[in-house]
Length: 211
Image 1 (cartoon, rainbow, N blue to C red):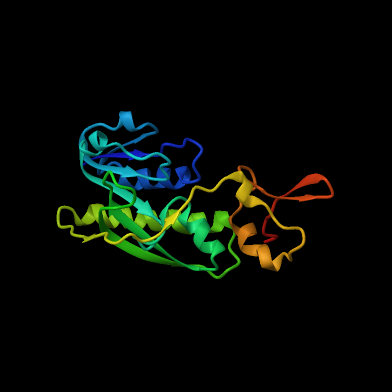
Image 2: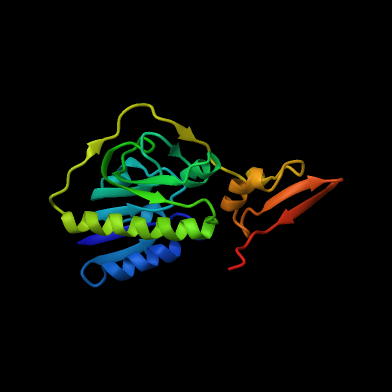
């Protein structure tokens, strides 16, 4: 099969896991990695991972299947950064949905789902590693089932998460570490580190596991 993988953010956390996926798919399939929608060529399967921009309809028509992995039990949790938002909500059981992309945001047919179970101590890199591996498994399982695949249509309004920004990593110096630990779990030490304002100055905190 001819497969194209799009990651439209060249600094995405998912790239190491995308490279692992490509290594597992080759040489049985022809696989290419692109960073712009326009670079997607006609083929069998297009896979959109960690994409920040909506995919245009004419792009979707270039392939028979257009796969997207999203870390929520769709239609709940549509939108941006679903893993981070759910951890902030206190959840440690995260559903990953593999679905067929359509022009509407996070709509289409769900082909497969899997549940990630965290313990509550994992930091963002730990959770991304588990998520990246599970997405790889879902995609490979889907490809191995072709052409005998079926799915369930996403229906209902569900819920929608907004895009997170650097300002969302702000800590409250008047609250305890325990009360804000879930926020510390999801900050990115380099791209959007935790910070707080105190006595007229901004302070940046970076978090690592000692082990």
